Image 1 (cartoon, rainbow, N blue to C red):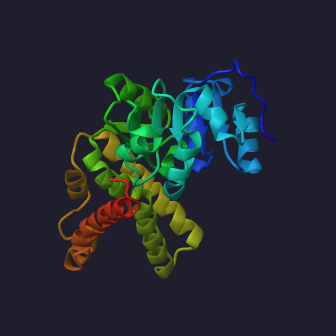
Image 2 (cartoon, rainbow, N blue to C red):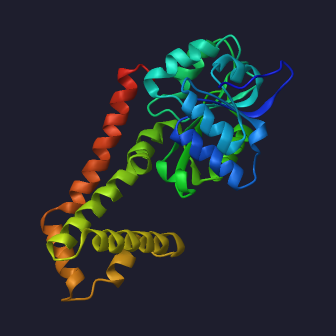
Image 3 (cartoon, rainbow, N blue to C red):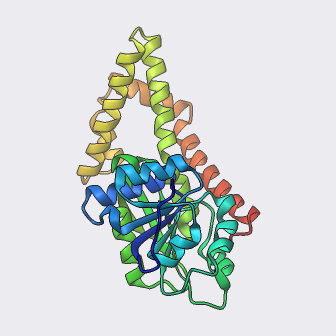
Amino acid sequence: MAGRLTSRQTFELGIIGAGNMAEAIVGGLLRSCRMTGERIIVSDISPQRRQIFQTQFKATAVDDNLAVARQADVLLLSVKPQQMAAALAGIGGAATPRMLIVSIAAAIGTRFIEKHLGADQPWRVVRAMPNTPMLLGEGAAAICRGTHATPDDLATARKIFEAGAVVIETTEDKMDAVTALSGSGPAYFFYLTEQLVKAGVELGLSAEDAKLLAAKTALGAAKMLMESEQTPAELRRKVTSPGGTTEAAIAHLDAAKWGEAMVEAVKAAARRSAELAKAQGTL
């Protein structure tokens, strides 16, 4: 059931699209005590998604995008890229340049949002690319500002995402690279772990034991990367003894040109991100 609003209510954060990423962002904000649920309003067509935000986060949940746009200081656009034009058209009469607009839609540029809200207005838009580990408070995100967004706007957006992710600031021309590296990145690690588990099973381990060992190894390696000042190459060399087991594995990967394939895979993802943006006219 959608929540009821009074005309005098205002909210610190409004969210259009109550999907998994929106859930991760709100969860992070509440866990870090940066915001309370009472200061958040979300809209979604799904009663089930609205119920999650109402019961789990004590947020106001409605089925009316206009209500969110009218009463939020910061508006987070969390809709699918193909739904963005319709969502912007639906709030055009309620959104005002006084609010900060933050978008997490892949392949949607800030100029696209500015144009669809009305190119004659100084819309303050920040674009962000978070990734799914935000669901566990271990995400990575990049943010960039549009034509009229200020450094203070970027700082506000940073605080939202820092509740569940490490955040970097970049320029919009680098967002395809961010999408390819960290946006799609979790899938690459899942894929690698999938192969490690497969190898462990073929070598006689149970699937359960192989998954546990592979996952914990990935977690430990990631922690070492985060906490060490050494480069990934230096850390790798430290566990690669001459004539040892690790060297045998690395030599096999090098012979198969696995490193080159990985680099080209990330570049392919970046190209696809640019193609999607061009296809949707969002450049």
